[in-house]
Length: 367
Ligand SMILES: Nc1ncnc2c1ncn2[C@@H]1O[C@H](COP(=O)(O)OP(=O)(O)OP(=O)(O)O)[C@@H](O)[C@H]1O
Ligand SMILES: [Mg+2]
Image 1 (cartoon, rainbow, N blue to C red):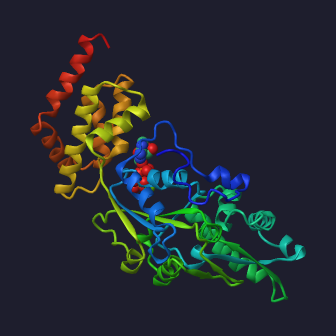
Image 2 (tube, protein in one colour; image 1 turned 120 degrees about the vertical axis):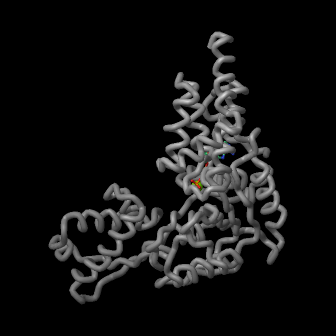
Image 3 (cartoon, helix red, strand yellow; image 1 turned 90 degrees about the vertical axis):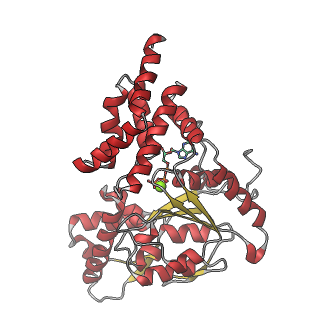
């Protein structure tokens, strides 16, 4: 896709920070059929009012390229990319943001030093990052822990404000920032959320003419806002995506392990390894293992990531058979019975011989 053809709002002025969030395709990026289709669909309907397509669902295998597709859309449309990773205990403040009292400095000094430094970081932030992100940076916490800490901090802060008339400041969530400013937002795995109220908040935000009610104001959906929901197809034990949320989506792509040619192209681009015979045999092995794991309800995945690392290990001098275990099989499972099933599939497809042949071929040619 030519770089400027699909820009949605070519006239928009971005800040430097926003500009930096617009994804640039790396040289290893391979345009997929899905990418072309989604890009064209969104562009085609962009000015068609109620027929506009601005909520996308990418559902499918782990490592199939859902996140990279969301990022590629950011590049194609020229919109900043941002994401929210959902988690089970998410609550409404994770959707809309948090409201924090500004604590007078005398009271602040009496607080726990960690809380103090976090609050300081929050007060000094310009509202460009979400509160959770400020916390992640200040404490070096992962997102979930930071969100939790934020809630605890809110409680502590309320206790320390001592009932005096305090000033409040609102720290919007990543979702709100994307929604208000018109970015492309990847919403990862919303199916894990447990609280129904959180789904309601998400659902209403995803209406095409939606709005979000903040404690301080009501904000409307920016016309450039695009939501890309990415989820793994429900594996055993995972809940399916909320129906109402699913219903808000105007275009869905089923993301599977890519076709063999695409697997090979991506692996070549990523690892720089180019022997076709090896790449083909390895790709076939991954496909066989993927299928076998599914057919036998083995939970792990043999996907693109395993493929890349297996090819790369081989390119680095490891033997095909030996590196198959740490790079692919053990990643799927370490259960002895399941390993036996996977080994049997590899054997019955003649893949061991094919691996040996490919290796031998290389040796003969002096590699
Ligand atoms: N179009 C592409 N061209 C080249 N490489 C790609 C492409 N799509 C994905 N990849 C590579 O494949 C790997 C997995 O991609 P990605 O992270 O997008 O998968 P995912 O479906 O989001 O996985 P998960 O379900 O784990 O979130 C990454 O290393 C990525 O760089
Ligand atoms: Mg992903």
